[in-house]
Amino acid sequence: MDAKYADLHTHTKASDGMESPAANVRLAAAAGLAAVAVTDHDTVAGVEEALAEGKRLGIEVVPGVEISTLSGGQDIHVLGYFIRTDDPVFLERLERLRKTRDLRNELMLEKLRSLGVKITIEEVLETRMREHRPDETVGRPHIADVLMKKGYAASLEDAFAKYLGKQGAAYVNPPRISPEEAIQWIHEAGGAAVLAHPGLYKDDPLVETLISSGLDGIEAYHSDHSPEEGEKYRALAERHGLIVTAGSDFHGERNGKVFHAPLGSRKVDVKVIDQLRQALGARMDKNQE
Figure 1 (tube, rainbow, N blue to C red):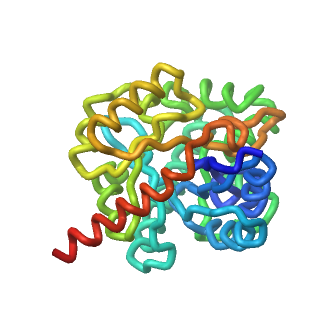
Figure 2: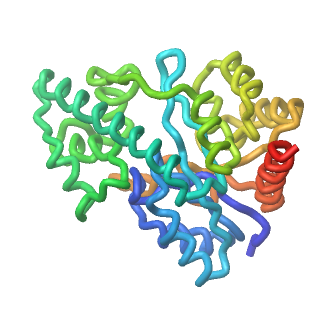
């Protein structure tokens, strides 16, 4: 049993994951991890359940979130760890982000219908197999599920390539907050801000800008990073005195394939969790000076 490691990037049914928050914690335990973070898109709705299961199993659960932002015409994601999940200002801000996400879904569905791909929001919501809560998010993977079910796409990758990805025929991206604002929101909610999967953006000048804007860490090791990219961003983080994190970005299994990768397939020493806490403490001390 490898009980010294943590997967700091996982998704649950509270956003576009396929497993419940409690199930993610059980998967972490089965993988021999000591800790796991729940980092759903623009919501903390799954954190409480995960914390309860973590307490039952003796697995540390790091409360987290993955905030969707826009810069240079593309999605940029910022992870927040140890945010105050009951902070009313932060929760209201996340609600606004979910409304933007809902708008994007509606615009994508309109564009799909204009292409002859007949899908409704009701069909998308049905993929959740339960009543949709307002504090949960619906994203492109849910639309992809319907595309696959109705034969418009052969796989999740095919759905994104044809329709939902940046080069897809139905891609739209309404205005969102900037990644700089997300860093500020996370800090104001008492959390540590980490840039998710920077290798996917192909924009290292932006990474440098965000470092100057107060990032606490960089997710160097991600399922979609090559080994070379992992080492590149580890070195960049260490050069700037930032925390180096790792995460699988686990979303569960869709159409027989795990997306992005199995929980625990990217992991970091649990000492990194202490570093995140120390970053919060250092900021609190500085604010009190």
